[in-house]
Image 1 (cartoon, rainbow, N blue to C red):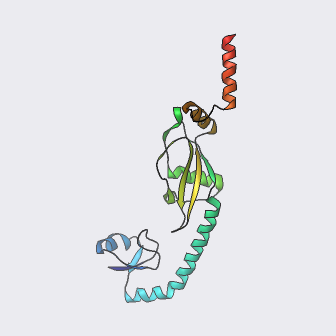
Image 2 (spheres, rainbow, N blue to C red; image 1 turned 120 degrees about the vertical axis):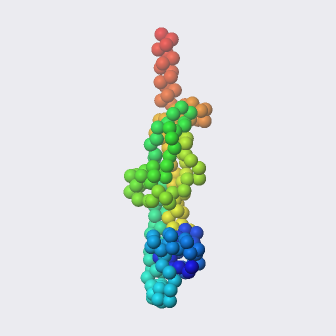
Image 3 (cartoon, rainbow, N blue to C red; image 1 turned 120 degrees about the horizontal axis):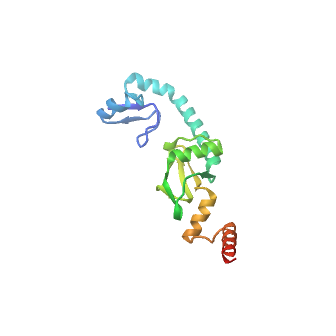
Length: 180
């Protein structure tokens, strides 16, 4: 069945595209959800009249996505999470947690479904996530997971970096007190 898309359908097309889909997919999903309409002569005529408006909307969306990309690309967001020994998290960082942190710290609201985590984040430290703002426009967000003291302590325990100066001083004081 031929249908006209009323909004972007990932992997199929964008608003205004006329595509061929299975009858069941059209009747059970696209038409009831108002994602598409049947491609009748009348609807195709209406589509031709609306092409200019669709192009304008698409241009606006692209400009907004580019603006958001400039804001988000390369920014660092702090995500608080409980960290156990050796830098392991209790649970994992979710896309919703990232979206909430971005909204709180940068003042930019993004949909959690647009965030692509390459792998589950289950360790404290620095990680990256990709945000698909538009079809070809993507931004990369850096995240620091866990609180900074826990990250430093976990890294020191794992032997990744040297102990923090405050920690060394505290350990030296404890050793001196034990010697007295």
